[in-house]
Each structure stands twice: as structure tokens, then as C-alpha cells.
Image 1 (cartoon, rainbow, N blue to C red):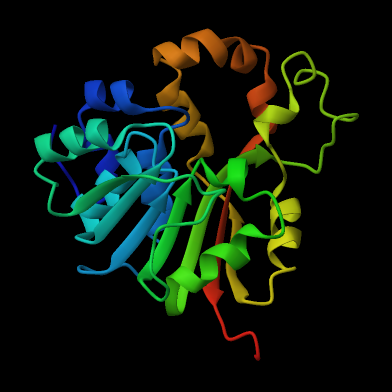
Image 2: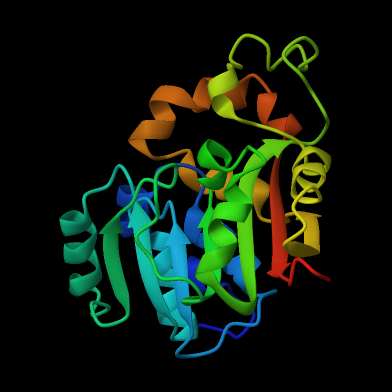
Length: 243
């Protein structure tokens, strides 16, 4: 296939590799859409928080030439290191085991940007996480997250009928309005982006052939629950609390 400037980087990536490394909707595709709206440049220092098997980190390092600290709780750093070395990215991506709910092992004013793709919903759905992350950013640094959610403000009692047989609170699905309202409570950031992402459906479709999706997600999607799914992008800029 002939590559063109208009074809996403993700669509040229090895399909078998992605099927082995996706842990949910295609994090590389979601990262690519989000990154296109961020001021990334070679040499920047990025924290990828909740990186899973690292495909979001790989996209950032390969396409933008940034240095990535790939932090995750569940995937062993050694496993990710081997993956990054195989791709020739061991000088660009540094794997770490990090529990975002505990003290973070990073210096203040260290990162140009913090990114989290399909992970922030598990540890950031509270009014304390942003305040915990902000000191790690340089002046005017950005926090950018992409999280799965619902197209509406559904609660346990009013989720759509097709979703009810599957839904549990462990999904941590909220609406864009819910997330924006949460972030607006933090005086240390200025929200500069809040949107529903165009790649939501494609990212889920990419994931469906994976063994994990066959076990868990295919029945949910076949029932039509995916019609109510969204992917939400939020970006906030660190500001002085005196502003």
C-alpha cells in the first residue's frame, strides 16, 4: 500500500503487533488524534501515565521524537522495556512501575506534558488527582487525557436499556460534561480543550478482534451498547494559583 500524508500513522503500524498489545480500544489511534492537537516537539519530556503495554508511548516517541516516561502499575517494566528495545526506542521511552494513587516518584517541574490514554478514569475520577499531578509539570505545562465514557449524563439508575445488562460501576464511564465539571474545580489549571473524539468508534472496532475483546466486549457491542459510548478528550494548562 502506498503511504500518503493523509493516512494515519496508526493505520501503517503492524496489525499483529497492535492486536497483541491493545488492552482496550486502540490506544495508539486515540493518542494519535489527541496528539495532533497538542504542541509536541522533539526533545520534550512526557509522562505517559497508565501506559499499559506502551502503544501510546510508542506513537509519541516515533511520530514526535519526544522522550517518554512510560508509567504503569500492571504491566511489568521489563516487559515494556523489551518491547521498546525491539522497536529501537529504548533511548526514547523509559518504562516504570507506578501506582498513580500513591506518591509519584518524579521531581517537581520536570515534565513538559502529562498524557493519559484510557487509564485516567481509574485513578483520576476525584477532586485530588489534578492537584497531585500539577507540581510535576513545568510552568504552562499541559495535562491531556482521553477517557472512555458515555454520550450522556447517565447514572446507575438511568443507563440505556441496552447497556443495563452489562454495566457495572467498575466501568468508570462518565460524560464529557461530568469530566469538565470535575476539572473546573481545580484552580491550578485552565481547561483549553474539552471534546468528544472522532476516533471513538474506530478505536473500539480495532480492538474487537483481540482475544480480550472477544471475551468481554463483543457481546456488549453486538447488543448495541456501543451506540452510547464516547471518548472524551480534556486538556488543561498549568497556571499559577494566584491567577
